[in-house]
Image (cartoon, one colour):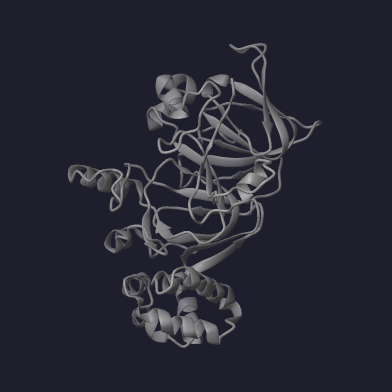
Length: 399
C-alpha cells in the first residue's frame, strides 16, 4: 500500500518565505526561510509514515518489501534517491559533487583520520556520489558549468579585465581553464576591478552574467566567488525545463522554485559564496574542466514526461504525470517510488483483485507526497492533477 509522508522543511538562509507554503496551500508565509522540502529516507531529515515510523527505519526493517530485490541488490538496504522541492530566494553557494570513486576514497580517508562526520571542515559525509536533476516549477536561474573558452576570453575583454583570464589566453584548453580557476578562486584581488567593469558595460550577450555578479557582490562583498560566477554559464529555465548536473560540474542555483532529485548523499565541495568550509585543493581535484557545456533539458509534452538521466545517474528517474477524471494513469511498480502532487488533487488507488492487499485509496492534495513500496505491485493515479514520480531506473522503468 502507498503511505502519505510527513516531510521536513530545511530552513536554510537562502530559502523563500512563501514558495513552499504556497505549494502546500498554507495561507500565510513562513516566519523563517523555507529552502528545501525533503522527501525520502536520508538520515539527516527522513520522511515520516502515518504511524510515526521514520522512512529510513521502515526501509531497513523490511528492505525486501520496501525496495524490492533488484534495488536491494544494487544499493543495499537504503532508498538510493532523495526528492526535494527547492525554493531559492537568494543564490546558493558555488559547489560541485564528487564522482562515486572519489566519494568512496575521500570518505575512507576522512574516516581513517577520525574526522567527526558532523565536523564543519569534513568534505565527505558518506561514500556516495551525488548527481542531481532540477526541473523548474517556476522560472529558475542557475550557474551551471563553465562557459566556452572563446566566450570567456571575450567576456573579460569586454569588461576591461583580460588579465583575469591570462592563463586561459596563454593556453586555451582545459588545463588553461583549470589554471585560471585556481588563480581566481583563492584570490579576491580581482574583485574590485571586475565589478567596476561590470558596472561600466551593459554586457550585450553577457548581460545576465554581469548583473548576477553585481547581485552576488551585494550579498558576499569581496568574495572571489563573484569573479568565479562569470566563468560559468547562466541558465534561465522556463517551467518544465530541467538541468542535469553530473559529478564535477561547478554550479550555483540563483533563484526560483524547482523539483530536485539526486542520489541520496550529503557530499558537497564548495567554491565560494558561503560562510561554510571551502577546500580549494579538493574542489580542484573534483571539477571536470573538459566537460561539455551544460544545456537545459526540454522533454516533449507527453502524458508522462520523463527526464531520462539514466546515462549519468543509476539511482533515480524522474517523470511528471498528468491525470484527469477521464484519463487515469495506471502503472506497475518496479521498485520504490515517491509521488509528489504539484497541481490539483490526485488519489493513489492500489490493491484489489490479484493483489495481496484490499483496495486502498490515498489522497494526494497539492503539496503532498506519498511513498509507494515495491510490494504494491501496481497502482492507479486518479483525479485532476500533475504528479512528479521519482523511482529507480530498472530495465523496465520506462515501460
